[in-house]
Amino acid sequence: MSRKVTDNVVETGASDTSAPRHVTTIIVGSGFAGLGMAIRLRQQGRDDFLVLERGSEVGGTWRDNTYPGAACDVPSHLYSYSFALNPDWTRSFSKQGEIQNYIRSVAQRHDVLDNHVFDCDVTSIRWNNETTQWEIGSSKGAFTADTVVSAIGALCEPSLPDIKGINDFEGEIFHSARWNHDADLDGKRVAVIGTGASSIQIVPAIANKVASLDVYQRTAPWLLPRMDRPYLLPERLAFKHIPGFQRLSRAAIYAARETQVLGLTRLPVLMKGFEALSRAKLAIEIRDAELRRKVTPNYRIGCKRMLISNEYYPALDRDNVDVVTDPIAEVKAGSIVTKDGTEREIDALIVATGFHVTDSPVYETVYGRDGRSLAEVFDEIGQQAYKGSAVANFPNLFFLVGPNVGLGHTSMVYMIESQINYVADALATIAEQDLHTVEVRPEVQRDYNRDLQDKLAKTVWNTGGCASWYLDKHGNNTTLWPDFTFRFRSLTRQFDVDAYNVTTSAAARADDQKVVAP
Ligand code: N01
Image 1 (cartoon, protein in one colour):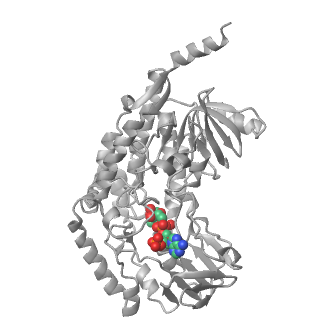
Image 2 (cartoon, rainbow, N blue to C red; image 1 turned 180 degrees about the vertical axis):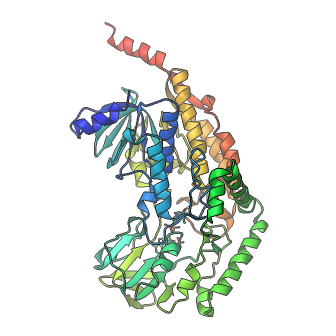
Image 3 (cartoon, rainbow, N blue to C red; image 1 turned 90 degrees about the vertical axis):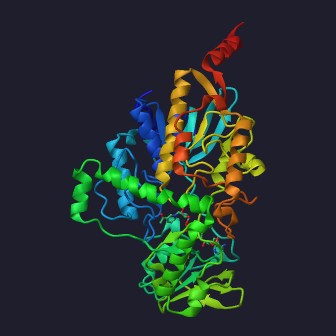
């Protein structure tokens, strides 16, 4: 099949009533993961794929998170594709706009945009046992596919807090990942709920514009210095013109970051240095003793994602900013009431409360071989996959950024590229060996996850005394990778077909002939 696949979708304006359009592989989502997968397929000489993307352009989380101050907390030269290094990064830590421009330019350069269907909201993905194909329902019509790659990411479905009265708030209200740029916050009384990675960037970006800012904190984050600076012209010239300089710099950043794995997963004592640094930062940047007490974390560093900012504490220390630690009792039409009875009037409410990660609503829309949804399967066994990429009962379905491939200390793009290696090799193996279906064997998945959970049990994420989105409702850590990332790279270097139950296309053809034979 050729690029016309997409043209046809556009030309025929496929709607819910059109016959399903068949493509060999459908990729859902075009953030770093889905786009990288599309580029790899193109590099393999394939054009029989479509990327279904609910947004109107590529970029995923970097397209959606446009809140003031949005920037990456992984250094620019590491936070990029290995096959598309960018010598032109302007800063050591990039801002959202620059990353989004980078992703856009990579998509254009690699000529995969014609394989995209934008504004295409995928509503269901269902395995059909008769046709042994995936049936995909979407806002741009129905599709069928031999293989599906889910690249929806973990941080795409905003989680709204279940607070009494919040739906009756009459001022501006929006989630950090759906920033309303039409809302004018200048001179307004604003509240932010949450003090995670998004909030600590938003708060300093708006604190000097608003009349007052109430920051509702449930758990104080640990903060480290942000070593951000603009690159000087000689550095940028060196990145561009000295062969190997940028790769060397990237490798150095990677190695430095990887040393954190020991402290996070095996030797907690190694995190003491970070903790001391963070406490010193707090002491220097916050003058008020009571405020210092309020924002001092009460769990071990690393248990939640360590955040980096040089501006957050000084913003909290401003006269027009209050940190509220009394739990929220209720939101009213124009105010927030805390459990101690205090009512604080506001004009706008920013909800920076994170995402549905272990309970993604998308899981309710994916139905496997036995008719059960991913949500039902995960409810029973917990969110889990084999190598973060395949789930028993869901043949020919692969995940990018699936369970237990997340990280807090280094670049997710590295993990994504590892998974792309694995899935690309799986698709190549299916073609080379004339396989019809591949489905990970349940016992392989079980053993793999048992081993993962054993490792995770010793990590600071599980033992550090905090609640975080890394843990699911059973208390299992089903989001993070508990080892060096190069171990994951080596685990995913090749598709291990022996871990899968397979059927061959020859057998499928023979079955078809039996059905039509008189
Ligand atoms: O979300 P979060 P986020 N009432 O889940 C609080 C990535 N990211 O959007 O800690 C009151 O971290 C919650 O409190 P608690 C990164 O991977 C990266 O900030 O659960 N409060 C917490 O303070 C990150 O980890 C970058 O007690 C409630 C906050 O809301 C992930 O995205 C930038 C509440 C949620 O924090 C998510 O970050 C931004 C309630 N009902 C994001 N419910 C960079 O690279 C939740 N909270 C820089």
